[in-house]
Image (cartoon, rainbow, N blue to C red; front, side, top):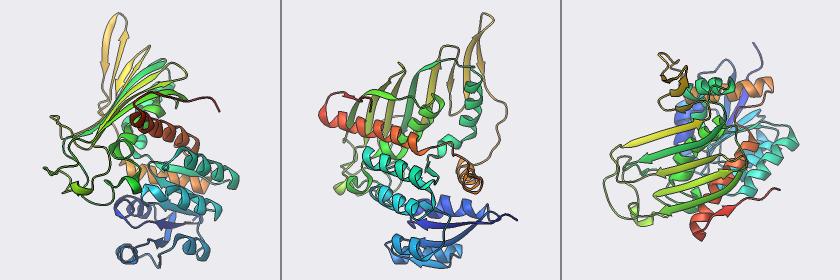
Length: 350
């Protein structure tokens, strides 16, 4: 058997306990989880006990110094992504960091530069990119079935889905609300399918109309008195190749559906809705709609972690790269900056 990947977990919250650790364990012939760290020691000890992780720390630097690791999962609040990821890369570890990449563009750039400097893999937990729908449509796009994709719409909208746990409503620790938590997934999926074009101009608006008052919570009861994020973000992104994306993301909005996560693409030779997958074309003077009759049922989180493990073991590049993380961070921060200023934000060539 090939040498098992020695993995450490940084951050013992929900995403570590429900996504990273269980899916590492599904690849137990390839992975050994040897340590976990969290500033809240009792949290780290509880997760370690549940999953039989032998070594527990409260300081990530101490863990990185004392334990021989090949890779780490960064599952901290967003504020600490850059600091922890850079430390892990400098310690010689490959890293999968939860989304969004960072709090600022400068942090995302430093993370990418450090990964390159130390020759390590840095990828992000953008799990929708690993869905069967996206995998399938990417093959169609690679065969030029849609032609040039010049327009997209992305929706990540909940009717009353403000998280009632964790630090999701704390702007200081998270950097934002639905845009950087659920909107980022749909935005990344669209950008990936469009070839991750370079952004040119963004225009964004944000609203805080529902989250800062009590109401019905479909995802637990949130702390409305300390609600410091937006409950809705809307925006438009134009790219240097002429393409554009229109985006809507909300934790709380007065809509019919309780939860909508969708990407729509429009190209010269065809279009597609991604969730669920349906392709629209004109062929032989006929308008054709194509729906797959079967897609494998593999869980996207499982596939994300499996791909990360294989990239580490085989020294392959992941499909979600650090450089793409910088572009994603530019767009996110540009939308927030535009919303704050009330005017478009234009990116200039570096």
